[in-house]
Image 1 (cartoon, one colour):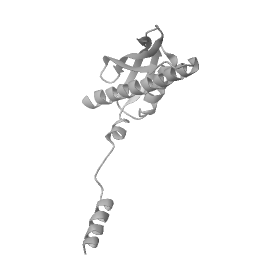
Image 2 (cartoon, one colour; image 1 turned 90 degrees about the vertical axis):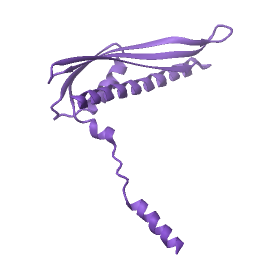
Image 3 (cartoon, one colour; image 1 turned 135 degrees about the vertical axis):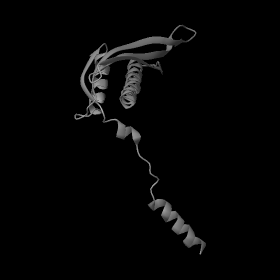
Image 4 (spheres, rainbow, N blue to C red; image 1 turned 45 degrees about the vertical axis):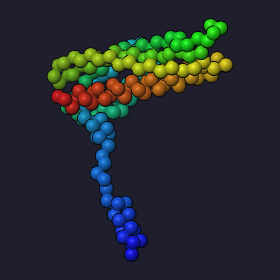
Length: 156
């Protein structure tokens, strides 16, 4: 008897839905980016541009032009006793200007993310760490930019 009640309760939980909706996916398609211009780091600019174009809608009434100024700054984080570098700090700074074509507003916002990576014995391994860190920083900053545009668009 207990087993039947447990099976009925368990199957009810599996069948019923919790009502979860991914709000991030629902809100990303309510704006259109007409033009994106970048200056600074070309590869990072291309990645951000591609990401924003993929997350914009073609038939939205909210139209924006985006201008991005990208700077990647590499600095020494740590040195050992003998003076050799053991860690680098990589920082990505993006100055964004968002032109709202419908309301004729211009909004400026700065985004910054930083990450550390270690120096390996081989130079090629250190370069690989730098590339991975740059990729991670790009993903963080592009998500921040997209979230800002979504929030700005929802506040109007």
